[in-house]
Image (cartoon, rainbow, N blue to C red; front, side, top):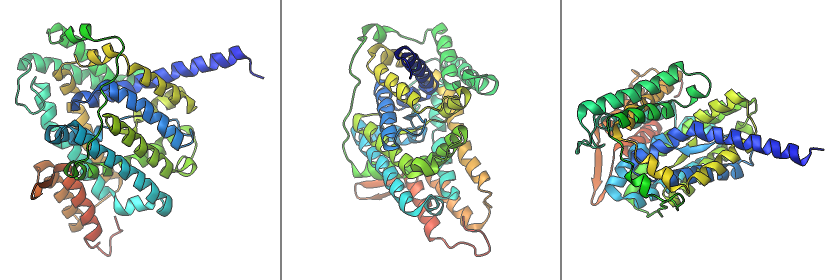
Length: 416
C-alpha cells in the first residue's frame, strides 16, 4: 500500500513535469494571440480548459496538450479586421463544429473517409496558402512596421537587427539545441530578440507597472456572422488532417494505438469541442502540440495525468494580469523575425505532405486542383453575391474540396 507521503511525492513530481510541459508549449501558445490581437491570458485559460475537455472526451487516455493553432492565424487577422473579434469567434466556433462532425464521420466510415474527401492534393496546397499568404505580414513586422505595413513603429535598421537576432536564435535552437532547448525554439527566439529590443530601447514597461497582479482575462462572447463562418470554416480542413498525424505521432512515442483506443474519432471530437469552448470565450482554436509530444518522448512521461497538471498551471497563469501585460511589451520586430521562419515552415509542411503522398503534380487533374488553390488563396480571389463575399483561404479550401470531388480521375493512375 502506498503511503500518503509517497503519494504526495508522486503528485508533486507530476505537477512539476506538467509545468515543464507548459513551458515547452508556452512560446507557441502565446505567439498566436499576440499576432492576432487576442488576449494571451484568455489563450492560456482556454488552452488549459481545452486540454481538460479533451481528456474528458478521450477518457483521459492520451498524453496530449492542446493550445493555440497556427493554421488559423491568417483568417483570425483578416476576420478581426473585417468583422471584429466577436464575429471571428463565431466563425471559429463553426470550425470547431466541423471537427466534431468529422469525428462522427470517422466513427461511421473510418479514417479512410478523410483520404477520399481531404486528400493531400487538397490539404497540401491549402497549408501552403496559409503560410505563404502571411509572408508579407512577417516581413512588415520584421522591418518595424505594423502587420499591414501602414504604420512604421520602429526605425527600419534597428528593427532588422532585432528581428534577425530573433530569427537566428530560433533557427539555432532548433538545429543545435539539446534536450528541452531543442523543443522550445520559439521561446529561445523571443528571449534573444527581447534582450536585443531592450538594448535598442524598444520596450515600454508602463503597462506592466499599471497592471494588477491578479485579474480576469478579457473574455469575449461570439457573434455569428455567415460571411465570417464561410470564410473561416474551410481553414479547418488542413489542421483536421494534421490531427490524425499528431495522434499517430504520440502513438508511436508511447507504443500505444490511440487510433483504435480511444479512437481518432474521439480525439478529433475532443479537439473540436475544445476549439468551440475556446471560441466561446475569445480564445484561439486549439490543436494538439507536437512540441509537447517531443517533450513526452524526451522525458518518457507517458502518464496523461501530467497533462492535467500542465492544464491546471495554464489556467492559474491566465489570472496573472502582469504576465499578460508583460507579453504585450514584446515588440513587433521580435515576433516578425520568428514569423519569417514560422510561416515559411507552414508552407514547407504543405509541400512535404505532397512529397510524402508521391503525387505527380504535372498530371492534369492534380495540376488543376493545386493551381487553383494556390492562385485563389495567395492572389486573394473573391466571389461576391450582394453583401455576401468569400475569398482567400476559405475560398481556396472550398474550391479544392469541390474540384477533388468532381474532376474525373485518370483511369490508369491510383486515385489520390
